[in-house]
Length: 103
Image (tube, rainbow, N blue to C red; front, side, top):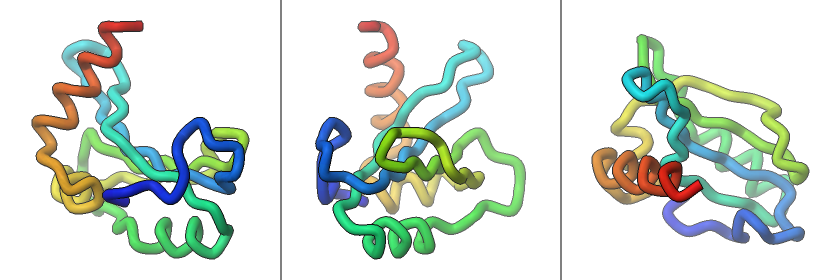
C-alpha cells in the first residue's frame, strides 16, 4: 500500500483500504493513510495481505467500497501500519492529527 493504484478522489477506484488510529486522549479518529485499487482482484488481494492483530490495539484497517462505505474492518498493529505505508507510526499520527486541525 505504499503507493495507491488510484487516488482517494479517483472515480475509477473499486475499493480502498484506510488505516486509522483511535486517539482516546483526544477522542478522535485519526486517518493514517491508505490506498485505492482499480480492479476487484487488486482490492481483494490487498485486503488478504492485511494481517489481523489478535490483541488489543488502537489501530484499525477499514476496507471501503467504491462509494467509500466501510464494508469490513480489522484490528491491526502499529508495525503493520508502518509496513504497509512505508512510514513511521509517529509521522503518520502527527500528519493525521495536523489534517484534523485544518478541518
